[in-house]
Length: 70
Image 1 (cartoon, rainbow, N blue to C red):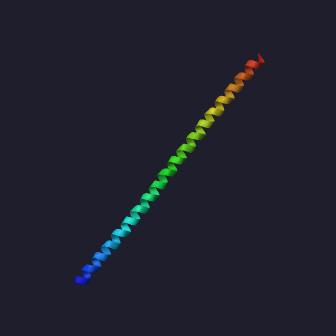
Image 2: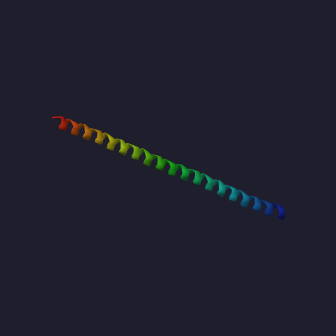
Image 3: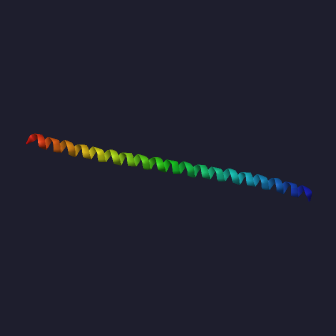
């Protein structure tokens, strides 16, 4: 009886340890995913902003050339 009790305690500790490591792994994965998502958002925003700046420059140059022609 005592031996069984001892083994169940050990088994329960091992299970708890396994659960903790699995929980930590899932947290790490989710954190990595969230970090990657934020990075992608920043990249998209940068691209969007650079596109806006490029369009503005094109319009400015076009306007400038029209003015110079007259």
